[in-house]
Image (cartoon, rainbow, N blue to C red; front, side, top):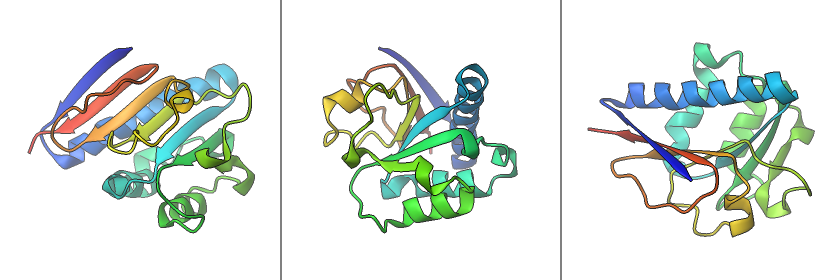
Length: 157
């Protein structure tokens, strides 16, 4: 596993860095394979990032129509994060899934976004089946044992 730790001086630059990396990965996958598989944690600590994902003009070109969106973490079917992203992104309903339903055979998730705190409950098969992790941490880099490349974004306040 390769780790990359990015420190930011303020919350806005922190969210900008995560957004840029997500967009870079999405566009690369869509260009090379025609599809992007992303998994989003339902942790409340990521609400600011998800709001940015829906409202930032720089992210309007996100390829939602070519994205398979997976949610993981503690939530219900009516979780507000799922509803907000599904409704505001324009992603087709049949492209929105939950990890609790399992990944179809042969599916690898291109990018997983988490705060690092909600990973203990995930099956190892899932954590090792993600090519890239974007961990949005508030102050310290969590100790993780994940598959793929891990990008840890820390805001220094």
